[in-house]
Length: 301
Image 1 (cartoon, rainbow, N blue to C red):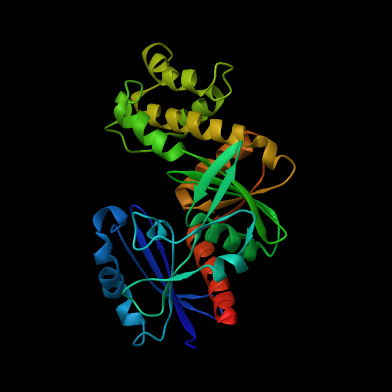
Image 2: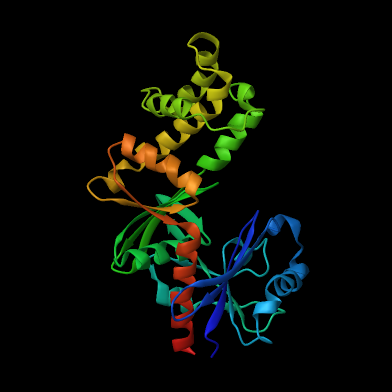
């Protein structure tokens, strides 16, 4: 067995690959690109993957573990989505061989199917398990900010439930495709004052559909600058998301698993709402989760 493995997080928009020391979990090398699922056809996946990580593979001895939307019907090969509750060991038992590339394995996703709640997830389950491994705890609530943010509950090393919020996708849609977002379209810089105004607007009793329109009315009549409109919209959406999940995190810290920029926004929102936060980078969580999964997969073979 190789002393190294290759961990890949492959989503709709991005490809992230890491060469990892199995013993220490140290990242020895990494590669990133914008070649997400949208840019490849199904038959191109094994060739693209080999081209990106072939120099690390030692003629195929170094195994590759892939998580994320790469395992969806739109990706390389559709891997199953296991029903919650599920453990990391069950994920490891459910990995499937990636067609066209020897010693490469696609990690299954998870799903919730109940009368009152139906949801799906690919990739974030690995990060949630990895985050709690890094925190050396078996239970907790993780928030994974992104295009489709996830709130994930783990209890005694089992992922028991999760909820998706379309916050990132809605932010893009409102900013670039609605009248309230119009003043912000040519302004990329983040404005903290606008964000904090948006957080307060998220408390509006008429809800986020009204609060989002206040980006327009405040711009016209309440001195919300064009530079602050994007931050305001972000504050409304993230603030509404955090408040909607409040019953889940009251009294316990939330483990934030994301990029530096997104973690900072969610930290502000959670602390504004009275919560406490532990931050972990999504890269570190992915590596920890896939290393633990690879160990279980080896033990089961």
